[in-house]
Image (cartoon, protein in one colour):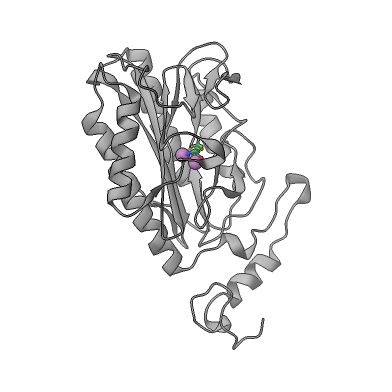
Amino acid sequence: MKRNDPCWCGSGKKYKKCHLDFDARLAELDLDINLSQIRPTHDLIYNAKDIEGIKKAAVINGGALDLIAKLIKPGLDTLSLDTAVHNYIVEHGAHPSCLGFEGFPNSICTSINHVVCHGIPSADEILQAGDIVNVDITTDLDGYYADASRMYIVGGKTTPEAQRLVDVTHEIMEEGIRAARPWHCVGDIGAACGAMARANGYSVVTILGGHGVGKAFHTAPFVNHDCAANTGMILVPGMVLTVEPMINAGGRGVYLARNGWAVHTSDHKKSAHYELTVVVRRGHAEQLSTFDYIESTDK
Ligand code: MF3
Ligand code: CO
Ligand code: CO
């Protein structure tokens, strides 16, 4: 690409005024192949217009998660939540990305207590007071995807142990987002999450994890939530990925339920999961679902 060509990122600016210095910095990085350090490809880097598109999807997605908070109560079945979210997303001109994704039958995932993730909503699944429930929702709008999940406590009160698991899991996600710093490695996210989980006596699910997101539901890099720092793909401004630690009260072991989707803890102890879509910026990582800023540095 020549200096006066339009930049590969699609900004419409000249390359020399846009990503020329960026490409030079990326090329100069002295990567350690023993730590599997690799450069991101250009297709993983979004321009300002793309980020606006992902944000619009994230606003609707966050609204759907807010709607769950209003509706969820003891005695309700999880299929009712699915129907409400499906209608909400469609009424906002968007599409629930989970529906039909690799054959998934519904618009949301509902994962209760010992279910880690990918639970299938059902009219037979009745919420009980004290259940801790993860609802995971992805919305796509005009070709842009946003993916987020939250924990809900049915009836507002659970055991102190379950409450601590939920609260600490949220803190672990925030710690992971703070570690998503430009020009550092994706493995720093897992190092931060893993250390915090262990310090609290919890284990981290690693056979599933976060992912790049943007113009597709799932892209590189895979985001491991318990791994060594300084490993994996280099994070750079314009990358968008999810931070979504799945934290178990007991062991890290999980198995796939007979329905082929839901992931359960092997010891049937409880699990919690929070997820946000995060854009890596020059000076900080930004949570697209809430627009809160979390300071980080590119030093
Ligand atoms: N939202 C999940 C994630 O965080 C993926 C769900 S896929 C589905 O990546 F098919 F189960 F919906
Ligand atoms: Co998700
Ligand atoms: Co995700």
